[in-house]
Image (cartoon, rainbow, N blue to C red; front, top):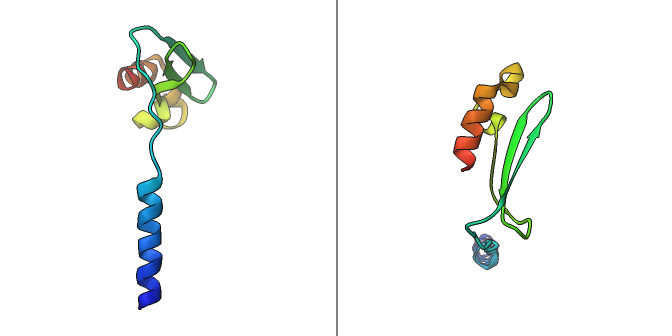
Length: 81
């Protein structure tokens, strides 16, 4: 019983130590659109190249051949931005 509690405490402290990276969001940036035969991926970055947000047609909920449509790209860009 005590062994389980110490493992839980260790995992809790490991989660507390893990921090998210802080990315500076500027008024200027770049937008990258990667359109392949199977998916569309849209990435917004700052001028240093750090990703601010991203989305894809598959992440929005499209599957199969519907992922590579202009409508799917429009919804993915709306979610990313």
